[in-house]
Length: 212
Image 1: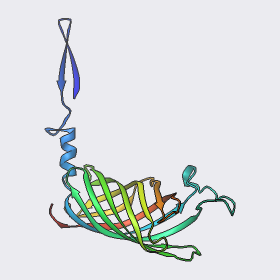
Image 2: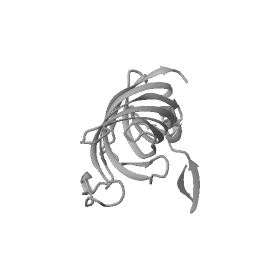
Image 3: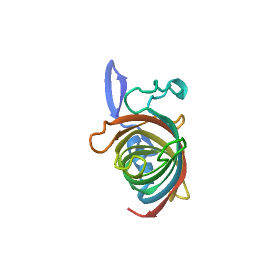
Image 4: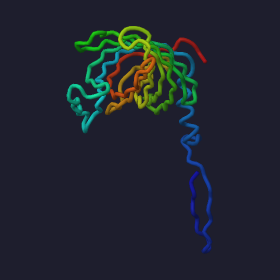
């Protein structure tokens, strides 16, 4: 709503009106754009990440590792990932995803390969040019390889998509600048949870497989 003030004969009249775009309110226009994504979509993407338990400084500067022997889990690594899965867009700016990931850690580690499964809750907003801003929060489990049995949460995912081919496909890219995501890992048994940050690039495609 907006307030429009009109002065007439020394009396100020307050008229309530609603912002509109082409006959629709702003909220209605956004809802119409969000409805462009509605139904079940399959996706595959390549994701390259820098992971660090020490966090990032200004301009994504890597904070140094602590001295050897410092208690806790500490690492800086590059991880190459292949993601695939199914996304359900609800048409109202919300959705869910099931994600399967194969991760290769490019470092001299004992177990360089890990396989995980995750579920994510999504929110998204479609711009007039078909750009999609998408945020996700995920929970998952490492099912094989390094860290098998670990559970994890992922927050802070903020990525971009571009609708193409008449709402039937989306091209993947990171936000600009890319987001810093936070992953909290809980080992099985009595292992202490630990947290690391990551910055990732993403390239892939999402294709519609069925209506809602």
